[in-house]
Amino acid sequence: MHESFAQRVLPSIRGDDPDPAAEAQACLGLMAEQLVDAIKTELKSDSYVLLDWADHQNIGDRAIHVGELLTLGEYCRAKCVYTAHVGNFNAAKLRQIPADIPILFNGGGNLGDLWPLHQKFRERVIEKFPDRRFIILPQSMLYTEPAALERASRLFRQANIMIFLRDRQSIELAAEHFGTDRVRLAPDMAIVLSLLMPRLLRARRGKPEVDLLYLFRRDKERSEARPESVKGAQLSDWASLEPDWNEKDVRVPGASRLAATLGLTEVLKVPGGRKSWLYFIIGLRQILKARRVVTDRLHAHVLSMLGGVPNTLYANDYHKNRAFYETWMEGLSLCRFEE
Image (cartoon, rainbow, N blue to C red; front, top):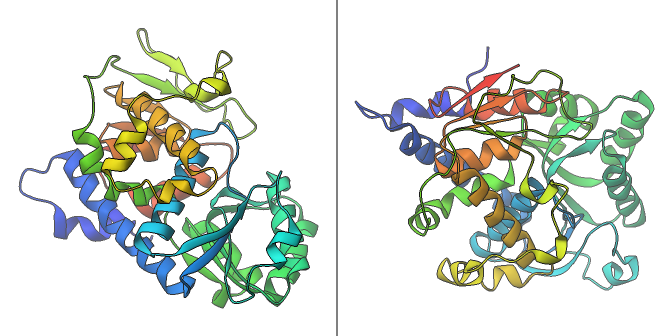
């Protein structure tokens, strides 16, 4: 049985009377520092291309995007020379970028055939630019079709690529099919935001408004194994995924000033960065309104950990949530996992 990251580091950070939130913050800070070092080691450049960032309303994917821009721009001191999502990618523009600048793909939970649009996009870019260096930022991996896995295996084994996986189950599968020299274990990119949290939480406004937030997904990753609703609990998905959400109304008073206070103004000038920051702040405020969170969304769990909110993470419909929890968070008293 493998120890989680938290179980390995807790003896060195736990005091005689540990505070769960402080303990989690210390652990996530160490996790973030190791993640930044790993990205620096593989980047080997003062410039980068970032493809497949999330141009949609999922707050978790937006938090990943902010974590990536923070890591690359602030901590790696690298400049984004071109970025695109699936819908606006331009191969001709990418060909104009010097060949020694690495091409990075957004992290998340879409390495495989569960969300095929993104995997097919990665494969198409790698095929069109066979002489370039690629980095896939931390992902969970799932393949249900052997033919799709075999196709990815052939392509990745021929490419100059490093693939970061965010749980042990994913990295074991990736090592078997893509090669051990092409894979590396690392936590989710949103974890880097823990390095901002002490200052972010000092700017927190108001006290929790609800005792319990049930935040559960409604898409194809949802699991039927979810708890009975409790009287008085607030039931929701991410606020941005609720039926009454209007994309045109993505405004957060004070968010730009907060970004400037944190030194993120230049980082968030990367296309898509400002809107991802707004979504992240919206999601964080949704979490901080609760005294406790129960969820099957991985990033509702991650944002709860970042915000020091006690939380229970339930399984989604494949290994992603359980494997991430067992790899990184198990042992922290701020959270627990349920099937």
